[in-house]
Amino acid sequence: MQYLVSVIDDKTNSATPDEMAAIKAFNRRIQAEGHWVFAGGLNAPSTATVIDNRGGEALFTDGPFVETKEYLAGFWVFEAPDLDVALKIAAEGSKACNRKVEVRPFL
Amino acid sequence: MSAVDVSEAITQARGGEWAGGAPALTTRSGAPHIAGEPAAEASAAAVERWPADGVPPNPGAWLTTTASRKAIDRIRRENKRDDKQREAHMLYDDDPPEPLGAIEDERLRLIFTCCHPALAMETRVALTLRMVGGLTVSEIARAFLVQETAMGQRITRAKAKIKGARIPYRVPSAEDLPRRVSGVLAVLFLVFNEGYLATGPDTDPVRHDLTAEAIRLTRLIRDLMPQDGEVAGLLALMLLTEARRTARVSASGELVTLDEQDRGAWDAALVAEGHRLVRERLAAAAAGVAPGRYQILAAINAVHTSARDVRDTDWSQVVALYDQLVRIDPSPIVALNRAVAVAELDGAEVALAAVDRLEDKLAGYHAFHATRADLLRRLGRGQQARAAYDKAIELAGNTAEIASLTRRRDRLR
Image (cartoon, rainbow over all chains, first blue to last red):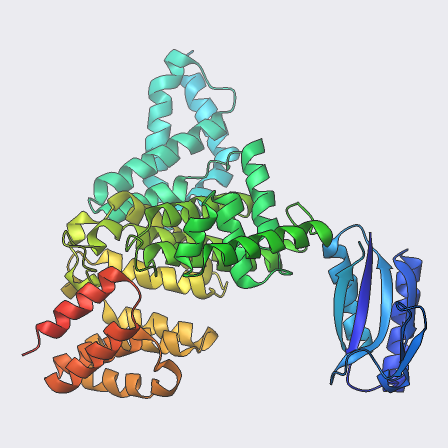
């Protein structure tokens, strides 16, 4: 079972060196424990482009699909047997990156 | 077998296992003087029985067991008062808990799934009532004053989340259990309270089905965690509250306050069981284990249920327990309940001053106005009391409570 763990922030690329070190250590550990699938940090929502190609011609719009004060600043994808394990890892991730996170299961 | 042989067997037994038996017995009975005489009585019984029956395979254990029984008999003889008997029973009732059967196991797994911290609190309560308690969606909706369709959707969403997010169907590991169980207790307490003071305008004022279910489930948790103080505390609190259930609503359907209840109508067996649990926790507290809120609330209820007449209530003890509770739970509702006890100890004026300080936080809570109204009435401030009763009646949801408040208001002249 895979879970998307979104890091919620109101800034981009705002992690301090200490936070970066903690995130690195956390990543290494979940890789060793076999939970790691993928992870990454995202650039600011203002750098996003929305594309709608439902009408035959691709339409590009500058900016994110929804403007919010807090947004997705990065994410992990974990492999975990159930929500208890996923929540436990995500809680450790939240502590490591010092941000709120949201856990959402894949279908 | 000769008398000499028996005497030698007793001496050997007493020198060996008995040496360990006597102190153990002393500690368990909590009264050092008890150990000596039952020990002698046990030896006497051995002298009487062993020549005829033969020396038992484990003479030391036989003596310890016999002395235990003698000690219980002695306590029962010497103390006619019921509570001492119960204490003796509590102290010696060391049967190991029955192993959980498959059905109980199944229910426990369900409880922990329904009370998962990833679900909203209202959802946990609703789901527990539906899945574990077997209540219908419409019953749950009525209990929580929401539309049946809304409650149905909430339960459906919760089930979808359990499935989709893979909330595990199991009792948490020993490591996670203490943390998880406090969430379960909160749910069971809410279920119980909803039963004890049902909020619906069309429901019975007291819903025995909910209180009974909450008690049954708390017992299950206690079987799982017999050493957990808060589990024991919550069970005691529920039992001591449930014991008063039949005295709590009058024949005319009116809520009867604690001071006006017919104490003879209280369920003595439930009171006894609750007191036993409270004593168990008091012993733990004396050994240095800090009690949590359920244990303190249970102790407060034990003080109330120990008084055969409301005038015998040990109010200083009640206030002291509330002081303890305020330190771990400084909520305005605890402060309000403390003020009720303060009124009995220091007078209505002192209590009213304490209640008035809570107005900012509790102005929307019917019990705040009801408490103020009672205090104002006692101080002879009839007009203000009437206004406070009016406000309490306006905010109260329970039909029996509204009837009681109305009567108290109309008694004002």
